[in-house]
Image (cartoon, rainbow, N blue to C red; front, top):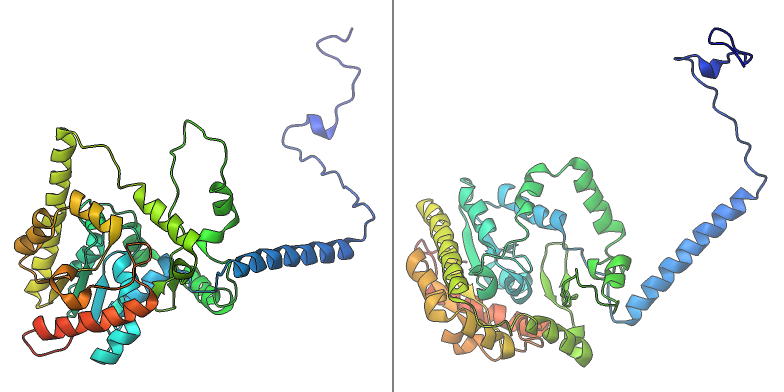
Length: 371
């Protein structure tokens, strides 16, 4: 047995603290690496091709990816020599239903499209109100269940706009030139893990039931957008879109506490709008609210959850801003909305022309400028 002062084992470098141990050298096995690399590359190309073919066969076409970077590009136009432009903000109906080429043909200037899907536009209105250099005109689309509920999930766009890095800008330019115009599958709705998540997996108690909103939009580089034609031609897809909307239409009756909370939220949204419009009006910026059409079960839900007299009418009264409600004008009714909320492209073009005519006739700025 070795004593405490001696050992039969000789000390090595590994026993000495601070001494780097040699890294073992590992010989690569003798394999045909270049053919393996080529095979992997060909397999990746083949799988990508199959994925692209699958979505093309489903009617998907390439389009601009409507992401944070694309929105930021349009918002910067307000600061880059277009401070006097007409700016469109709102939710998806403003994005889908107002066609920029039609507006440009009628007014001589293309508006800046800043409307966003699935969110209240109040944060964008407040951003324009805080921009002391902006001296243009603002059209605010009002979708009742978003505007008055205060549902805002894209407020991070303002931070993204302020902090967007050069690499993010360059990456978006590369995407717009070399990826988006050529690949139909390059859309958030067709990402592999998105597709996997919406498969009919066994129910788990810790996950909410429900179907996520599917692709509805075809977008262009300046965010001119229109409804995907599949909603017109594919009855099953149209039915799916309607079924997704109806998930929110049959909530149980609200409790007195919920009713009071909803009223406080509605009052807060109108107050925010009033404050922002007061700042814009102080700079001479005209603001116009527009309630775009909805039909069917969606309109019935909106009338039930956000009656006009307690929402739209109060908004106009408290903000002292003019508004165009589709139910007040025969020219703004009778359009084709396949899933009750957004117009077909042909209808949107006719609607834009009718809406612009009403605005010019009834709400032209007092200085004689055109919307």
